[in-house]
Image (cartoon, rainbow, N blue to C red):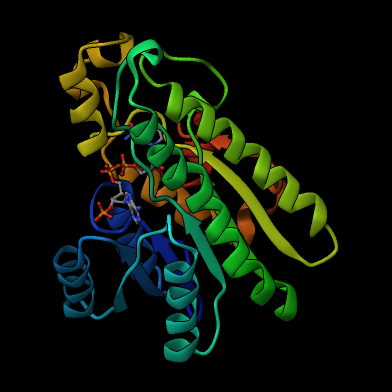
Length: 253
Ligand code: NAP
């Protein structure tokens, strides 16, 4: 329904969950997609599935916590498709869930290295390209946890809050570069991440019934819509899956 013909997109964290569904939705909308994540067999199988249904996709092994890996993913995209129009900063981790007071400092820092530094690595790798071409769309997959503390998620809340501010900063510094910046809170979505949250039993989110969560196809369709000019009036904002106007505009209801 949404048209991304001729566009080229990188989606991080495309091995499963929201990222895998977004890669599929964007390919169906006509974009050529780069699926980036650490689990190579899974991104290769997702890319093969997209190609089988007539889409254009490649898989690139990438650990976003490593800047060189992120930079070579972007280089592979340019080598393959000649440009980069859309960057979806989606990869993220919730583990290790647990109280701050007993947290393991190395594990806590590693989660921040992925959720915050990984987002920085993505921006740092794509901004020079989008600045040079004076166009592009960058969508940060944020969370309600960026704005409200949750028991057991100190690493996640702190990193998501910092990443939302990082996006604001990028937007301020690139106000004249015709780059479209958007944040997106997907609500609670039935993915591995919610299974890990449920298993922890730690805070009210872990008590939710799995049937309360959105299917990954919902945020995927909303993110695809956000890449189109129809969403231009929302540029610079963090949109929420739970907002009925966004659901309507994305064609979900
Ligand atoms: P998920 O099913 O656990 O998927 C996370 C994805 O991130 C996987 O593809 C994983 O792939 C990738 N990833 C993790 N660490 C990575 C790294 N170092 N380098 C590259 N890729 C990495 O989670 P999800 O629910 O789809 O979450 C996607 C995004 O939505 C995250 O940013 C999350 O914070 C956000 N979010 C989710 C919910 C929810 O309810 N599910 C709510 C709010 C926000 P590999 O392990 O193969 O690398």
